[in-house]
Length: 246
Image 1 (spheres, helix red, strand yellow):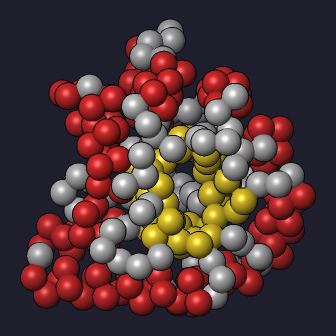
Image 2 (cartoon, rainbow, N blue to C red; image 1 turned 120 degrees about the vertical axis):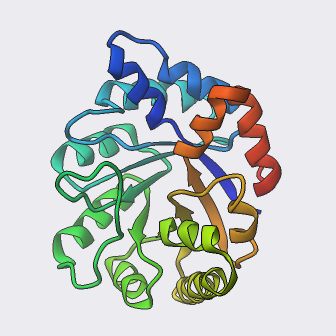
């Protein structure tokens, strides 16, 4: 069984395209939680193109009374604004993600040759606030080792390459699954929990979850896109049937 964490960024993207407060990120969170989602993810970026700091605080307020059953995950690059949010809100988990100039969404995990000093210090700071730390990485043993050396609790495997291989099927899918299997087993043997996210959807998720050690999957774009046609509560329940995390 893997926990489902629903990324609500796209609700904020739609709201920001028009201004005002509709659709409401808070209402989306409440709908997901009512449908049984055991986790909520937000990714506030410096340019505030979707989730804003005010959203982070409002979602925290909604989830405070549910803290024992709904996990709050704040992800983002380790800039001062993100650090301040995490240390004030104290979510269950912070996922540290590299950001590249001009990207629309995350394009890769942290490189294994990234200097560890400041990030390791940040992991220690978050632990002092009782925040679990996950590091967004490609499914490569060297990147996983680097995350372990930072003192992280988990890695989040970047799964867009898997999604593209799933579309191709055949030997490409088999090779990709073996890559992710090796990565998950390596992480587990290094004492790290294994999260996963990016381009996972109702079609490719069941096959991905045949892999061992997957603790959590974070899903946003595909879930919200389908919600436009069948409703948010319905699609959350569809994903819960797959993950078994109801």
